[in-house]
Amino acid sequence: MAYDYSNLVEKTQHWAEQACTAGWLNADNAVALQHFDTRSPEALFSGSTLAMQAGTRPLIVAFMGGTGVGKSSLLNRLAGQAIAKAGIERPTSREVTLFHHRNIAIQNFPEQLPLATIRVAQHDDETKKNIVWIDMPDFDSTEHSNKALVLQWLPHIDVLVYVVSPERYRDEKAWRLLLAEGARHAWLFVLNQWDRGQDEQYADFNQQLHKAGFAAPIIFKTVCTEGPKDDEFAALETTILSLATGHIIDQLEQRGVQVRKDELQKKLQNTAKLLGSWQTFQQVPALWQQQWRETVKLLQQGFAWPMKQMATYYAQHAADLMKNPPTQQNSLWDAWAQARFDDALDEFIGKIDEQGLPVLPFKQQIIAVREKAPKIMQTQTELAARQALANPGNALQRVFLKGMRFAEIFLPLLAMTWVGYKVFMGYYTSNMAENHYLGVDFAIHSSLLIAMTWLIPYFILKKLQPSLQKSALKGLNKGLLNAFSVIETEVLQVVDMLVEQHKDQITKLAKIMEQCAATDGEQKVVVDSDSPLTRMLMK
Image 1 (cartoon, rainbow, N blue to C red):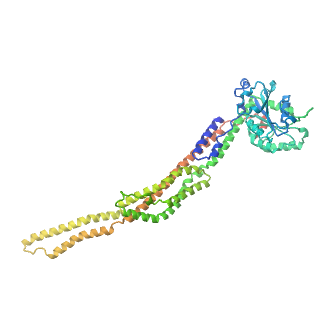
Image 2 (cartoon, rainbow, N blue to C red; image 1 turned 30 degrees about the vertical axis):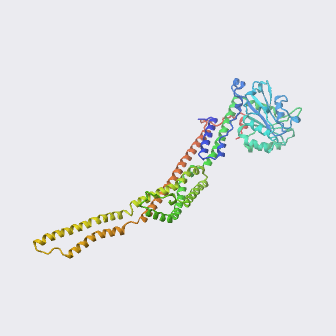
Image 3 (cartoon, rainbow, N blue to C red; image 1 turned 135 degrees about the vertical axis):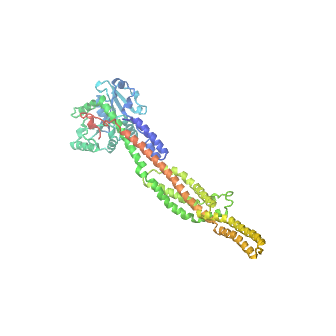
């Protein structure tokens, strides 16, 4: 379906505002998508009596050209009277002269137009009732107000009659304006003062227009001197009158809307380039992982000595660790580590910038990770160290030591039970067999047995007891790796979120661009092949 231009502008402005807030566009690019020229010829006649009666608005025709080319003289000739000041009295036009049917009310013109600089002349000629003729100021004048007037009126013009003279048809200022405004209007060209012209000049002017984009430009040769004239003025007037139909005006309006849509679409395409491609953005997570691996190696080297000192601290304060937890000063993440981490993030953002992607969203979102890194490191290393001190050694070592603790109690009891049994049985059998009671050797051996069953497990427990320092160091290493993993994940989560946001921004932008090109399946502008309008539009 076709979309209204004003609706597309509103969507674009809303997108630009939220994209700027999120950092995807800088302020300058966002401002460029906030201001669009919605002025048009039809806006001049909202509420006009003539427009309501005829069902359509008048055709706006303006004479435009440099100083001294005879624009005002041409308009006076069309009007049959001196409505525009010309010649010696006004060698440089400084005002806008309007010539129109008296049924067109001037008060219906938008307030932003400089009405104070308008000279109005009215007529009762019914053959020209559907045309508003305008004599524009000399845009190449040194008067800055002249150029401002031209630029303010240009969006309200349907047909521009571009007037040149044999001496000034190569005017650089006029040529730049022609190239800038070419697609927005229909153009007729007048080589005025032809009585001083040459065929070579006509051919050169025609070639210039071909290069500008006019396949077959309509050029009239006119003369505005006193006396009889043998020129193409009548053909110019007839051509302009043939354009003052509702059908032609509708075609011009359709083209004007489509030109604005095309300009909006082109501006959005240029904006999309600033956002970077979706394929490039998908490579951002890999850029971070590569950068983080290099940073982890550097941090591990730098943490080697502080971790040994931290392990000693944990081993010495294991008993009262709950009462006196490590402070920030005892944390592994010091100013050096923070500086290395900041360097890694900055290098990562620099690589994103090298890919031609917006970096402001990353700068904004990664700030939180910068601030969280010390806490992540302290939390993970402290937790792992506590767990290591709570369960020192490895699993096999802990099972073996647990068996030794059991043996330290059970073996002496078993030995004492055996000795007691021997003492009892020796005493009992000594009365019956008149044997001697247990001797000194038995007493010594029994004592040695009991002592050995207790001393051996006790000795093993003492010698194989895990080192708290080594356990703490092992825990710190584990916590360090956990912290590295958490930090990497935190950044990746930010990156993944921004990748999705970028995809969403691109999708919204692409949708608006598609709507700019939507025309209900019809051609953008349908111009009758036999109409002079086909030769008046820049390709």
